[in-house]
Length: 137
Image (tube, rainbow, N blue to C red; front, top):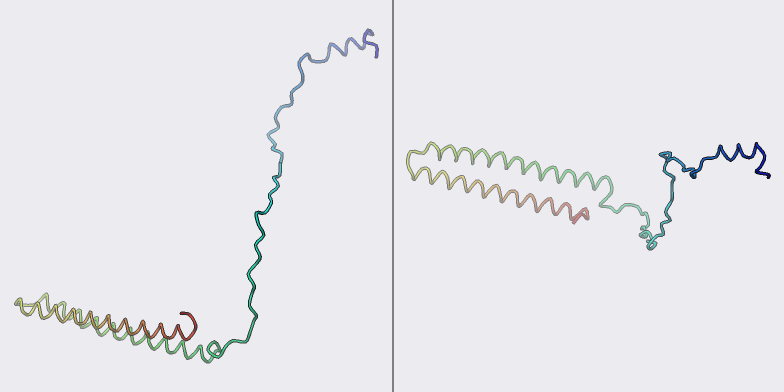
C-alpha cells in the first residue's frame, strides 16, 4: 500500500492517535469454576419391605389406640377430681380462722398435689409401656 497518495494520507489523519479502549458494558461473563467432589458417599443400604408384624396390623393398632385413650381419659378424670379438691383446700386455707385450720388446709393441698403426681407417674408408666409394645422405646 502506497502511503503517499492523497487517499492514504487522509486515512492516516482520520485514525485516532491513542489506542482505542473498550467501554465496560455492565455485563459480567460467567466463568464457571470446576468443583471436584471430596469423596463419594455411598447411600445407606435399605432394608427389605416385609409384611407388617402382628403388632402393626390395624386390629392391634386400634387396641393400642383404645388403651392409650383410656389411660389419658383416666388421667384427665383424676386431674379434674384432684384439682377440685386442691382448689377447695386452698380456699379453705384462705378462709381459715386460726393458724391450725390454715396449716391443716395447706397440708391437705399438698396431699392432693402428691396424689396428682402419683397419677401422672402411673399414667406415664402406662403410656411408656404402650410405646414399648409398639417398638418406640
